[in-house]
Amino acid sequence: MIITDAVWEKINLGVKTYEITIEPTDSSEIIVSELTNLDAEYIVIKLSSELSDYMTVIQKYGFKYIEDLIHVEHDLRDVQRNRILQRLYDETTYRQMNEEDLNQLFSEIKDGMFEDDRISKDPMFGKDISAVRYLNWTKDLLDKGALFYVIRYRDDSTGFVILETKDGKTYHSVLGGGYRKYRKSGIGIIQKEQEITKSLGGKKVITSVSSNNVGQFKALIMNGYMPYSIDHIFIKHK
Image (cartoon, rainbow, N blue to C red; front, side, top):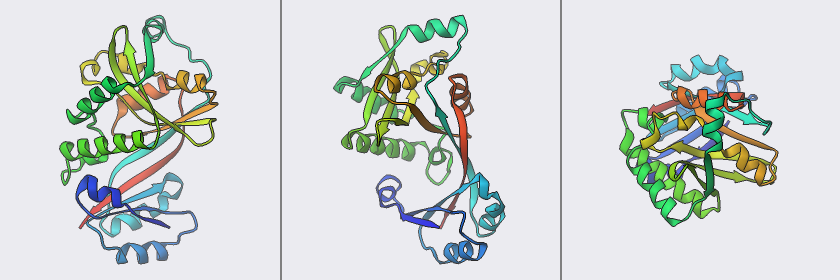
């Protein structure tokens, strides 16, 4: 069992937080012992779907299921699109963000562009705290040198994507999304991180999506992503 004192969440959420990952070598006895001894205002458990037998044990000790985190990957092979989607794709471009782009991104986050994550869905936190958390996260990624790209349709910015890599081969699409103005336009289906990754010499791109965000999961599948693992997420408030 991996237990992380998520000190950054004290800043984001205002409460002491532990994040727990249950490992295949953990027994029910170990899980029960650790869960009963932890003392924090907020605890998050990540449980691989391969260890689903432990779900009832976790829930017995007051943890509530809030989402599945679905991990997907793309090998950068060409995607077949219908005529309309291909036209939209061809008219959609990207560029690395400048200061104006960053300010627009921060403004969109403050206005609540993310609403399907576990923090937004949690009545103990809600959308305002979620926005603060995403804003802090993006600024931290910027400080760490992550690659920020703005997505543009014709002459307007429609969304963004942030990429990281450790080896120059596998790129992690850490965060991305469509701006609210284009939320219902269909533009959000168009994704450019595969093209960006290929241009950078990468061989694969990975990302994750909440099971609460069906629209984004559908878009990922339409763009050629394939699921490779799922984590069940449980939470507990003191």
